[in-house]
Image (tube, rainbow, N blue to C red; front, side, top):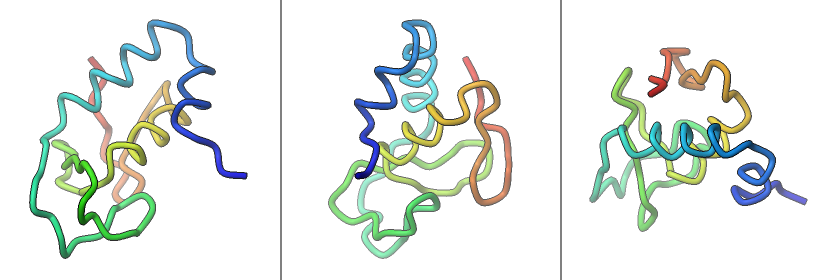
Length: 88
């Protein structure tokens, strides 16, 4: 059974949840990324909310980004190039 965003978020304290939301919101929103793949799950980005990581430019689904940040809340980095994902 796959862990959901809600499952991961419920395991964080209130301050950590705020950090996750701020990190996601501070990265660039993208539209029309139909032919690209998510850097985290490697699925197509079409029709799903997407973010571009400001530190490195890699693209990912918002849900994938939230899951990734929740799993590495102390020191989140891009899964591809290990560029630090800015904390707020």
